[in-house]
Length: 105
Image (cartoon, rainbow, N blue to C red):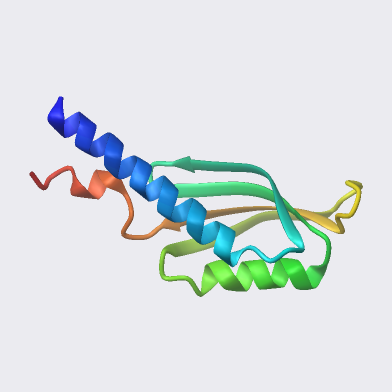
């Protein structure tokens, strides 16, 4: 039970670290429809009010050492008020997976 509790706490730490980081990276021109964190993968669907805002966001996550394997799944124009585009991004959370520490006791 102690090892399961430790894994759960590590997962919460990872989620907190990632969400705080995403908040700092995200320009005001970008907002989220959905964010999913599973194992060491983050997937999101977001809107951008400008191409420049999308570019700032993408540059921010690509240059951040917390993330690797950044993939843009789709980019399309959006009918949502204030949004020029909708996009999907998935990435790997580098060195932050609680599964990596399971072997350490």
